[in-house]
Amino acid sequence: MLKQRRNAADNLAQRLFATEQAVDEAICKMADLAGYMPVARANANLSAVVGQDAISQAAETLSALVDARGQLIATHNRLAETRDQIGLQAMAMGSGDMKPPVLQNRKDVKIVNMTDHAA
Image (tube, rainbow, N blue to C red; front, side, top):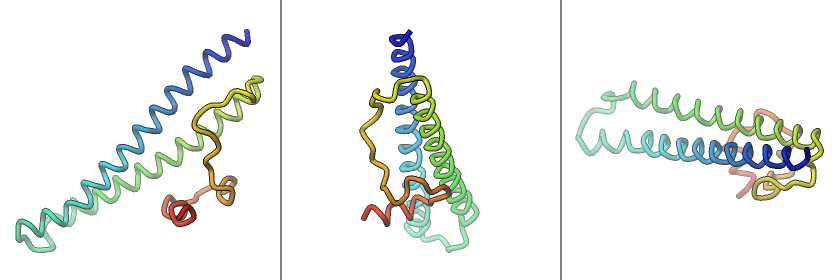
């Protein structure tokens, strides 16, 4: 029974980590796209009003991805609670406890605040 739980937890953790990595990569790619849009406009010698709607939409998309990342972190925390509930507390998953102590119990912390804290 314990072996089945460990196998299930391992498989679940692999999927969770892959999803976390994919969301982080999507945020990076979206940030790159949004950051390049004004450069592309300037390189094309276009007025600042050209493409403003697209830039605004890109910023909203980036914000949505950051919000999704927060939800995924919440999922990760709930899964850690579940791991403990089923008797797998000693099973290490991930790369250790990398949460800044000041922010561990706070909800609605923006990624900018976390970056500022880490610096």
